[in-house]
Image (cartoon, rainbow, N blue to C red):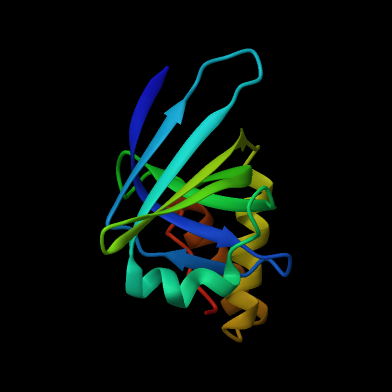
Length: 144
């Protein structure tokens, strides 16, 4: 097993919108097993959990999440996961996701394009902004 720092985490909705999970702390573990399983634990403040609660799937509900691992300038990785547990720990909540990493290039491009179109970009402005951001791979803005 290998463990890494979870820098940022977002829920990817069915409409390809991104919802930030504001982390107090986070950990991601590559179990390095035959099933290629990853564990992602997000530690969030109680107040943020209450805002986020309606966006979370039910326990054992499937959800795509996007995570930045180790350094904030790393490209986000897309995971197909299941929310396994939600535990209250003092004034925080621990969210445990179990899943598998997905090929991210095409999904990231789709999410980026959706984000730029929702911001109202069209024509050459859309093309130029897309080219610039597909190279720099910034964390995408949320719609919530």
